[in-house]
Image 1 (spheres, rainbow, N blue to C red):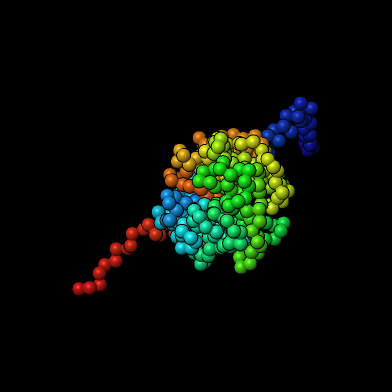
Image 2 (cartoon, rainbow, N blue to C red):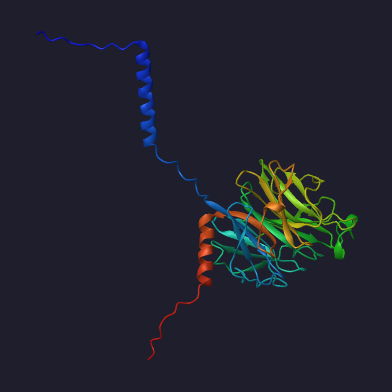
Length: 348
């Protein structure tokens, strides 16, 4: 019998069904081979809050946060750096900035009355250079005080900018008597590249009223100078914002209207994970911190109810640091709090 070849020809509907079936099986196969979604990336940085507590004689205190809202205390009480310089050997209002040499430079208030500020450097917040008292206002007669110094590294000018509040007797007579205890502050500054030579102190900002607790933040390519209106007659005691093209000004005068409640001080400003600006401040009469949030530094939202901090924190600054810095601080804390090993006695 002759051999016959059978040929199968698919009709059009059958061909469409076969093609669809092939696609479906291919999709299922590829899905089965797909690797699981990667876990969310772990943040490579965290925030460190430098501050003081009590009468400030215990020295530098630290807290940290992963998200900029929930803060945990570091250390078990003793300060990370105890003050030993300045007229009263205090360490109030500690402010830290990273320099181009990879070291963090810290400045602080050393006394209620005097002409100096404190300075020391560190690379890990555990080991510190020798402290020094910088006589920033020694050349200006009539200086009563140097309060709440802050420091930034100015990439544009290639130097450190240090600024603070001082009352100088005989200056700004038009606002004399508008603050407590005959203080009449303005913001002064100096610059340095090596912390050995300093430019003569000069006036940085005079908004036309007594002003303290200045802090700088760069946002949207402009510098924002947040200050406290220290006027007590009539009461102001709130935070306001001036704007300038450079870290050294000039800044807008008068500054924008207040964006906080009254009777606050010590602003600490930083940019959060979502690009929002957060400004923390010391609600010193009520003994707690408050915070405001903005995405444009014009409209503000009170987020005090969404933050948590260790009790007793006072005026400081918030900086972003590599996560290993926090890990090292936490490891050191664990080692210091761990009891000594129970080693059996070798004596008979």
